[in-house]
Length: 130
Image (cartoon, rainbow, N blue to C red):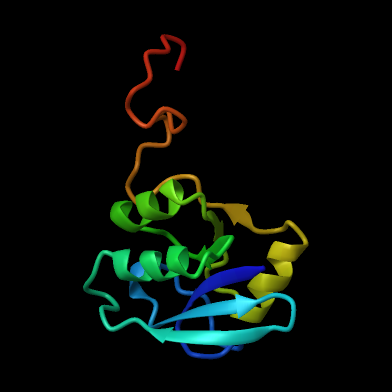
């Protein structure tokens, strides 16, 4: 199983980024043997994160551990059914361990999204009770 981690460094000892788009590296971790594939985020702090989201989906990662995510990258990950976990401020290694123990919160909304928005229908909902 492959898990992506948006980190502020290129090892598992570096901290998970508070914001997906600001991370300096994307770590793709093979959970079977903890081997890493490392990608530098050349757009750290200036981009939408879509390039990193596409790496995650191209590598067929099951999940990503990060902090908040802007809309464009969030929707790419959501569409490709990548589970999103909030591991901000933990080291990548700590966050992976917490994820395996089901102790990380899911990221259900993109940064700035109204949590009352009916996420299952993404704008096409005609439910009167939501």
